[in-house]
Image (cartoon, rainbow, N blue to C red; front, side, top):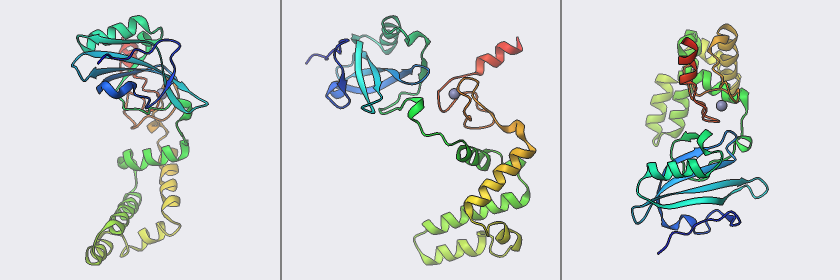
Length: 230
Ligand SMILES: [Zn+2]
């Protein structure tokens, strides 16, 4: 069997069979707005190749566009070939091998208030008050109780961990989970605005206060800070 090559005029939608001979994706490179991607893959016969994809906004789907490469002896060779033949690829960002579909940045839902709520409640625990921590712990226990299989376990979790014996926790949670988490977010960020870690490229919130790679556009700023330090 021969690997199919996608030419410039061949724009096939996803799951048209191009990937049939592909054993696994080894590497993925994306451009800055993630509307183009190159997947370096290992083929079933042990050779390597690359596929160049373009996002079709109206179809909401990836299409293969030229050039493509196949029958390379290693993933490195395929990557090198992709970088020499795909115009944007040498400036592209290497991301984790990404099974389709990875969506373009503009298509990814980004609701900053809820991103910040998750960020603070997960990664800013040291900056919380005892009551804020106790409230989140109680919410965690309630969620765990709701998932438990038996009434006995559920009741035990609720009795021991849900904060029901602590009037301050009960009062803090009285307006509901969402309101409590948002209040924690607002209070922590008001007192510690320095905790907000934004991507220097797309300005969105990074995964953690110390992250140096963007979870949204994949921009990596480890080296920028090293350069700034001289
Ligand atoms: Zn970014």
